[in-house]
Image (cartoon, rainbow, N blue to C red; front, top):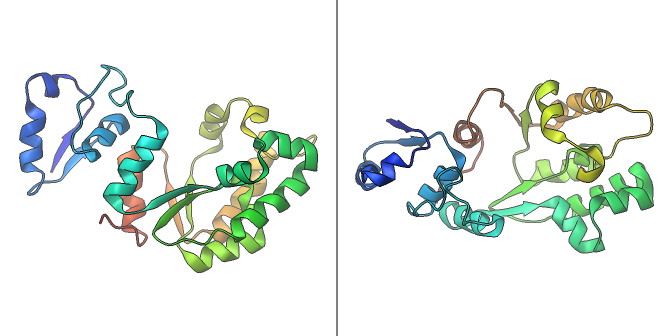
Length: 212
């Protein structure tokens, strides 16, 4: 097993081809997500010293993983936005939090797919019908992080389209949702202090996701 970190030196001194030659006999573990993306893309050349996958947009990255894993990636927030032709925050403003959660529940319960990874918004957990549906078609994975780390990552809640009620704090929302995440989850992954690759491997080990 070889553990590799992000480094342009490995490209400059032609270590990458050597790693390719060993990949059939040894596990090559990449600790940097951008370089991992390039390795999945048949060891594509990096385009930037700090952001090696800068030349890959989201659609291209999704295509890389879909091609290699044989899985389709579905963002349920985008399903909602494409259906209503509005961003999430506009829908929340128009319908209120309860109304939006019903919209989200209706959209999610009608996602019928196989060999797919479905990424939902955090408020999807309020849709009992949708969660029952997801449980019937696949494995529900809860990526668990402590409140402090979530607070740092979220930034402006209004720009992100978070369904938070008047007078409710982010900590209130965290305390309200966490028991629901645990209730519906088939698999709970503790993500604190782990690399993206470690999280992906743990998900794969605890579900039916396999590389094709």
